[in-house]
Length: 170
Picture (cartoon, rainbow, N blue to C red):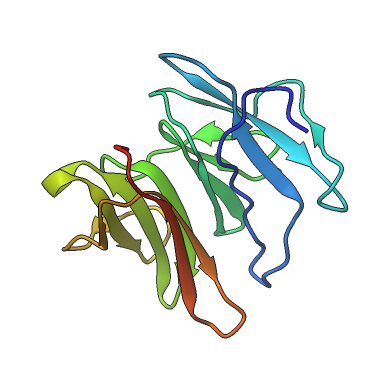
């Protein structure tokens, strides 16, 4: 499927909940900036990957979080970028974030919540909230001690399910 090294993809949904058939993945890179590519599909089985990166994380980055707000896509991966062309290119943008590992963003009532890996207090998953998807404020407390690489999914009944790794250091 991907010609680059695999990673945890981010498949953002549109506000109506439909999948826009967009997937972003990063190329393997030991240090420095990481390159993120776009792949598109009309059936979620056959994918076509872009030849050039759509985002280069200036501070490294892995496992991107991509979400839609204010008519654009935002990527959090080694920095922050915004795309107004459907995720085909991202331009660096200032976003107030913390020191987050493997973030995953979901729309919630009143804004957005990001779940991320932290090494604070022995490691685990914490969260932050933003009313606009740009300015974030860390929430107090550990969401899940010992967990890493969170992925949050909104279920059909409106509840949320958190998938994560255990047993390893983030």
